[in-house]
Length: 364
Length: 202
Image 1 (cartoon, each protein chain N blue to C red):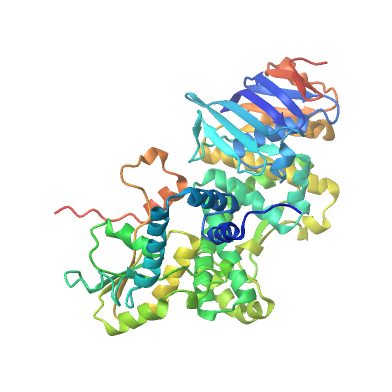
Image 2: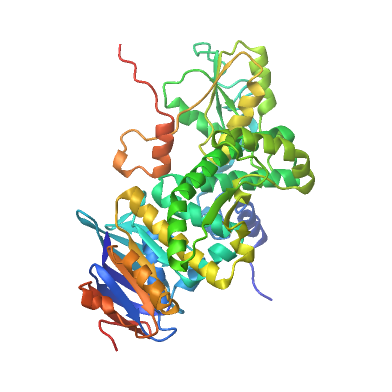
């Protein structure tokens, strides 16, 4: 799977950009603030339906314009399709596939690394839950609905606890949270188990260290001893928390408060890791995601790496390159001129330049 | 001083804009139209409005629209009186009537919605419990909307009724007939699979 054509209009600082693409490595050069990251974020949005960092729709449309339009033509193993998204001020995004409104999302397998992905390691627990949930949503149809419904039920339960603690009615929402929550926790544990060997492998290789990273799903307020007992565990936790929930006025237990911990020799890297360790972990997480998607779907993925290569030393760059070169299509941005010795090794490399929101099909 | 419309016109516009789905602009348009409308036609509208206030009330048993103490459905002896279908609004009764269902109804006149501050006391639940306790009811079919609030209301009712010896069922959620599997959204498909049933070939 790869992008054959990209067409952007009024997307942030890019007023118009249209380009045909092939497989292989695509290097996007240019000085700072020329639109390199914006270009990659457009690819990410087109493929995954969300942005790598949350933004209001108004920020996505070029200042002074009415709407932004993004489209891509995607080559699949057999055949192709076109996806478009239209962003208007104050309205929901309009998604189309082959010109028709899209009701069931076609998957575009894309994994991205952006500088803000350090937040997955450093940020609040929600960043780590989102990291899991967003990719499970790609892999499992209906996951998004479960997450949304859980959120809606939770919101109502919290409103009740805060404003009208009707005990019997709260029970109804508790039961709903227990059943939806069990699905959530099971899915997250399943995905984290798939990720773990890859996270450990990449961390080891990128850091050159022997110590293993231990990812662990940490439940909040309920027992996870036995996976088959999640439902009973949640139910019991809700029973035990009831008095405190009533006095504090919100839901205290459940997967919306769970955490994923990454430990190295018993040390939690979020709190005690060095910048280098955190960065290596964040990159390992994304590479693991790429491999799990490939493993579970049998599809090669599109890889998008924003401003990464320039920060890595020679050894890590080589290791990273050997990992992504086998993928279909890889986009990287860089401000520096890099020596792409890989070009001589027969890999397809294309260099594009972005300058003040315009793309030029050569190095400048 | 800025000129405004004569008082009777202002009053009409204000009254109209209290109606659901009608904003100030639409209210003005209707009011201007009525000013130009012949007196007989307006008289007909006034009579119709008075008619619903004088003659229409809610059935004492099920809560559907009626002209007497009981609605036409509740007083129809030809219906299956052992089954009650629970719906959110009176208009849902007519929707269910399009099916082959020929039992009785119970209109909740709302839905439990914590976000709107509507608790169980806001829906006509006590009457339903009373009917199930008193009457010879064999089955209660919950036909609330497939929304988070609709589902929660159904679950709450089910809990309230579980002490009685009645069968409690919920209408199926899933694919529309005549629809195309290919174009169904994921959420609907998932529901349809969860609610799949055995095929009985005799």
